[in-house]
Length: 472
Image 1 (spheres, rainbow, N blue to C red):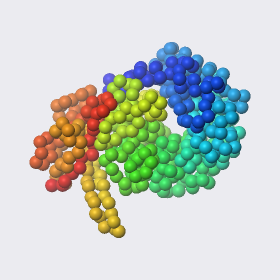
Image 2: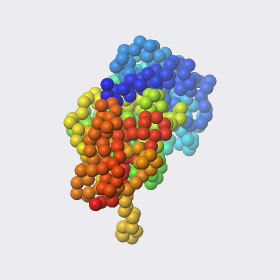
Image 3: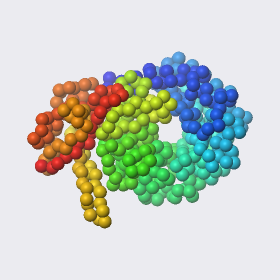
Image 4: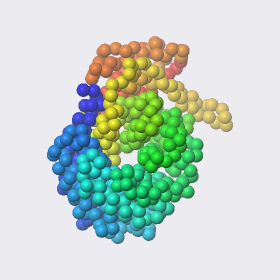
């Protein structure tokens, strides 16, 4: 069993089968009418993500216990649905409800939560033949469609992108129900968003789209593909992300120059850049969706890098805990109970299995990645730091604290052939994956392991991926 296959099984046992066990589970109870709140929180997304994950897991395992739990949750949601079709976690007169006249003036994640709930219900319909789930999703979509598209993109945060993501759930629902009016409404939401943030087909830095929120942007791009809309524009923005906005670990990264979950501007680099696990999940899906439309090795290479490093490096070996952020250089930090990324990570694993992304890799090769951190003043370079990272096959390698305690150190390697300082070795081998011995000029060699293994696979481990270099 490969490390990714083992992660899928651990996540299934410890997250999918334990986080929600039926209508009595806390995330599901948020939908109970007497318990609905008045603050515009996003916690309602967990049920939809779990339904997506559980439906795919059942399709893989045919676990009758899991099937019964999904059916019970779907039935409960149907019972809590209001006559209007509303199926959220906000109280009847709360201003954060999407149909409230003041919804655009307050904090709200109502449409976002509905988007995930509809996605979960459509998964239960498509992969488990649950007719009740499809009807419940259709009624929830009808409630959304009672609001003008322009009003949809005025709600939520990140310049409307947190609400505009409704386009993919609607596109999926339109396909399953064969109701053209649903996809027509989704197209109107796209036009409303473009009226607000500019044409999505414009060739620009993806960081300039809305607020540059990586999770929302990747989901929007998946939505455009689901609508068979603006495929060349999606391919352009995918290439922009792949070229300028991925960490060494393969996930969309940012978080240093501006907001923690948005893309930095092109050219910005830091070895401490953050990748949100939710963004990794959506990025892997985007790669897979584009590969279906236009098969290309570049998409497979991209999803393999993200799966084996950003995603696999975020899950704890216990299968239940996840990191909210992964850092090329930084500490493993397991996140809190309600964190969005715990549900996104387990979903990403099941999606990868379902889409056939866990197939064996081509013969591994050693690859050296280069990066630089510079600072200019009036056109003059005043600071310059250069780094290298090492990849072997799909795995990016990291060092534990050097000499037992150093979290960073400048190493000397030849500029012409830096790969000569790295040697594949069986020493310290785990999971059948070799280690790499780094042999810098004038320094005691040290061992590097795949990022997901380095320092241990639990909270608190330190990993140094980008090595600062002084060229020989």
